[in-house]
Amino acid sequence: MTLTRDEHAAEIRTRGYTVVPGILDDQQLSASRAALDEVFTNEAAIAPERKWLTESYRVAYMLPQKHEVFRHLPLNPRLLPLMRSVLGNDCVIGSLNGLTMVPGGTTQRLHKDSVSLPGQVLYINALHALDDFTIANGCTRLVPGSQNRAFRSDRPELLNSSDDAQLAAYEHEAIAVEAPAGSLIAYDGGLWHAGSRNATQSPRRALHLLFCRPWVRPQWDFARSLSPQIIAGMTEDERSIFGVGIRQTWYDWRTDTRRLD
Ligand SMILES: O=C(O)CCC(=O)C(=O)O
Image (cartoon, rainbow, N blue to C red):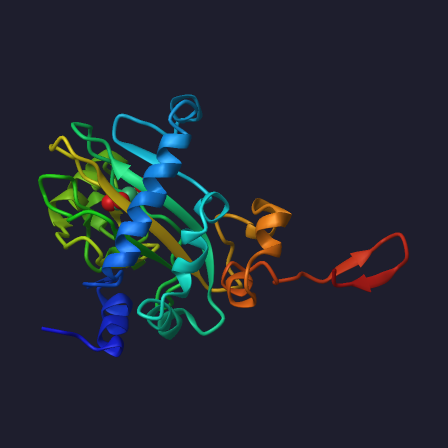
């Protein structure tokens, strides 16, 4: 059954996640895979010492600095209107990382990516599956509807137990989200989720595009994280979605003037 954009948005607001098949077309999918593989290869030597390679996953940060493909992706017309309908037209990208669950690796602990505020979606992780997501290769698992739970206080029966016990209880509620390559798995940043054990010998690659409202803290300050050369080559729309143009008024103590630069 195909859902409308409004129905996908409603799923994010209520159960905390939605799945949209075909968010990437074939050309975008192969370009994204090739670009991420290139970054992983370039960073192979430094990944272990930076802890970008763990027993569970391999990650690459700040992808828009590292490949042109990733500067265009947030503007995908199949994606952006959905993000805007939940987070507002002025939403921005808070981070854009690539991740693969390591073949034969371990599972990842359930966690949240961000704080949450009951009744408000502040962050959405727009995970793009670059390979088929299956139980065997460690698809994302998540706890539907858990985005507004306050850890250790929402389940009175667990209040006196350890965090591990509470996480174990959450594990029982977690569902595995299987989806074909090219799908969007969009979840509230406050939803409990994790990558699972990849029991195959092949990578399970994903892009994590974290969108957020412009008035919450992004994970990265793109204006400082992208080089001046990259910023100069970006279109206005790209600069805007990465929040590069967002300025903060400041008070110049030297001249006692208001500044916006
Ligand atoms: O790629 C996934 O399945 C989720 C990974 C994740 O949650 C993370 O690395 O924070």
